[in-house]
Length: 114
Image 1: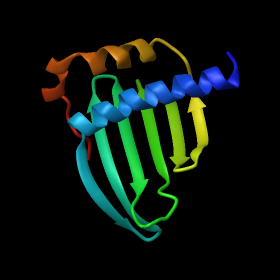
Image 2: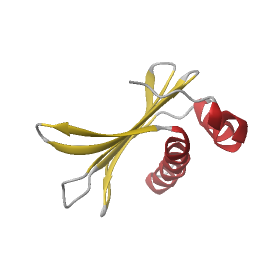
Image 3: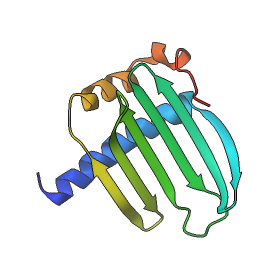
């Protein structure tokens, strides 16, 4: 797999995860010593999805973390200029994430994590 293929694959999986988070995730704003963050969190079956975006930063650094069965399988950080950091562990979790994204009935059964 080339670097460009890997980036496109990560971008597609990130869009799926962000779609699930926007539809089903609990939203909150976190005030921390290092700034303010908008946060989305969802946990369902073997998946845990987490998204953080800096609110008070010009770069608008965003971080997405996808865990499958407790293991981090996708981590991506980006700004308006593009990816800053990315980690992908390919596996069967990708097909399951796609399936979860396509099933509208699952939208009501996601539970937010604290």
